[in-house]
Amino acid sequence: MSSRVEQIRERIQGALEPLHLEITDDSASHAGHAGATSGGGHFYATIVSAAFDGKSPVQRHRMVYSALDDMMHNEIHALSMKALTPSEHQTTGNS
Image: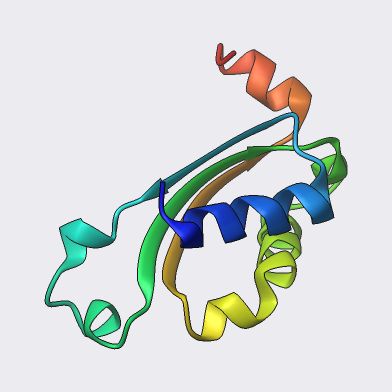
């Protein structure tokens, strides 16, 4: 696992205390892309946290971006995510 993935994991865990967290580094699929050539990676995350209860999808994404703050300017070029509450995660049949 890349050190960037570990940094992302640590920051999200510290800020949101997720019950479930998956992070995938998809940077290799974007080789040659402008963001890839500047050093920023492409990542996908599934985050399940009670901190998202009562929050809109936009608010949830802002919470994640806030946790990653300066990484969003250099190490991360693109971050796609599913930001779910525990009950939403349970309803989708995920474990």
